[in-house]
Length: 293
Image 1 (tube, rainbow, N blue to C red):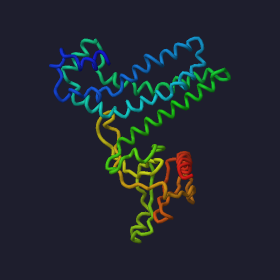
Image 2: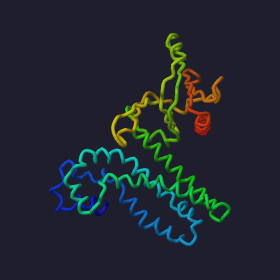
Image 3: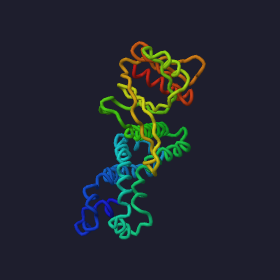
Image 4: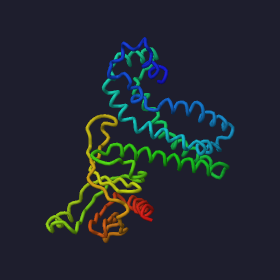
């Protein structure tokens, strides 16, 4: 892909096949694939080769390189831009010519998906290795490697949702790390509200997608998009946010093990939040507690 497509975009002999709108868009189309390639070629593959005779110790490889695996997050975040560009120009003569020269059966987009598939495959391989490595040296490293890779997958997944937030005025990066995101039923009860509004609010929950950052929790409304691939991915229109410095939490709401409360400014605003399962509720309550303490 890097030699047969990316490099060809800079080849003067191919320039006449590239439409002006596609020129200078190499970085959008390929993201940081070159960085991923060099990481595997120069670093990770060599590390793995050291353990050919001792496969049970391969967990160390992952642990030593865990920081480098974050390059996948960058690739996945760019993927929606890359896909939308590809859809505009997929029938371009330039791509057809590259594909013909490479004798590829599949078109470029199938290969651009590879890094996304690769990062999700590691956890499966590690789980499989763990199954056969009980009680042997290196089992702990394998377990830790698996946990770390799952952490990276969660970060990739969360960031894919976060880049789909629309309508937020500020800079999301200023809210600190994104810790959790998910969909909930939300009821509100505002002291200042008109009494009729309060009564209405009690019964019908709103569907809200919550993003918990270190400094704020964002309430968004999910909008399903029609389209293919990442276009099908939902977008989230920003509704409001609460500064974590003024938030309080009540872990248990009478009569429902899936509900908890977030309140604001000494209960001036109260949000009753219902998670899909008691387990999801427990994880969120723990994360919020950590932020507050």
